[in-house]
Amino acid sequence: MRKCIISGLIAACLIAFIAAGCSKGSGAKPAQAGDITVVFVPKVTGNAFFEAANQGAQAYAAKNGFKIRYDGSPEAAIDKQIDIINRAIEEKAAAICISALDAKALDPVLKKAMAAGIKVTTWDSDVSGDARQIMVSQGTPDQLGKMLVEMGAKGLSKRGLNLKGPVNYVWHYSQATVTDQNSWQAAGEAYIQATYPNWKNVEAKNYYSDQDPVKAIAVGEEILKAHPGIDLIICNDSTSLPGQAQAAKNLGFNAANLTITGFASPNAMRDFSKAGIIDRWGLWDCQVQGALGCYLAWQLAIGKQLRVGDRVDVPDIGTVELMPNTVLDPGAYTSPVSAVVLLPDRTEFTISNVDNYDF
Image 1 (tube, rainbow, N blue to C red):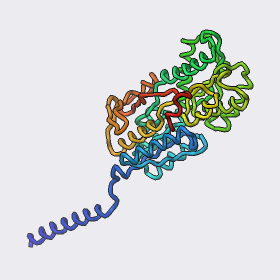
Image 2: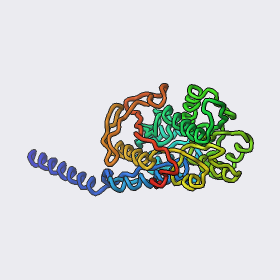
Image 3: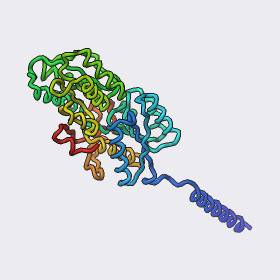
Image 4: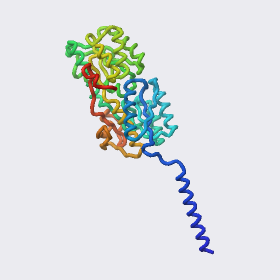
C-alpha cells in the first residue's frame, strides 16, 4: 500500500513537471537578439542631419541583425520627446537611443525607463550621466568649439580681414538648454578670448531659432538688420546654418562680404556653397553616429555588460573605447556603467569637396 502511494506521488509530480514544461513551451519565448527593436529618437524629424542619421542607422541595423523604430516629432519640443519615451515604456521597449532637446528635462522620464528595464543611450546631445548608460558624442566641447571658430577664421582670412584686428561676430543656434550646442559655444568663446582677444561678440545673449527652419530664416534676417557691420555668424546647429544662409541670400549678402559657418550636412548646404553664400562649414558622419548609438543600445538590450574602460569591436565601424563622462565635462556624473564614446573624425566642407559626400 505504501509503495503504491509513493508511486502515485512520483507519477503526479512527473505529470505536473511535464505539464509545466509544455505550458512554458507553448507561451511567449524570450526575445531573441534579432527581434529586439531600438527606439531611435531625433530632436526633430524632417531635418537633413537627423534624417541622414536615421538612414544610416536603419541600413546598419538591417545588415547587423536588429531593428530600429525611428520615432520623432516635426516639432522640436521637450514634451514631444517625453511622450515618445513614455510610449516606449508602455510598450515595454527594449532600448532607446535619443538625441535630447534638453540637458535635464528628460532625466526623470529616462530614469523611469531605465527602472523599467529599458536600456538607454544618447547620441548627438546628452542628458545627465545617471539618466542613460552610454553617450555617443561627436567630439569634446574643446574640439568642436575650436573647429567652429577656426572655420570662421579661414573664411575671414579669405576675405582679407586681419584676424588680429576687431571682428564682430554672433552665435546663432537652436536653444539655450541644448547640451551639445551650448558646450561648443562656451568652448568656442573661451578659444576666441585666448586666441583672438580683439574679436567682439556683439550679442552676448546669442540668437536662438528653436530648430525651426522658418524661424531660422527670420532670426537670420534679424541678425543682419540689427548688426549691419557684422563680420562673422557662427551657427552651431544644423537648422540655423541653412536658415542663416538663406537669410543672407535674401538680403543680398554672400561669402565675399559676410562669413557664415557652422555645422550642417553637406546636402543641406551644397546649393548655398555653389551660389557663393558660404565658404566652408563642417560636420561629422551622422550616419555612423546614429548607427553606433543604436548598436550599443542593442548590445545592452541583449545582455552585454559594457563598462568604462572597455573597448568594443563594432562591425563595419571599428573599435571604440568607453570613456568616463568627464571627457565631456570635468564635473560630470561618474559611474562604471555610465560612459561616453567619441567619434574619431570630423570634416570641413567647401565647394571643392562637397560633391564627394551625400548625406
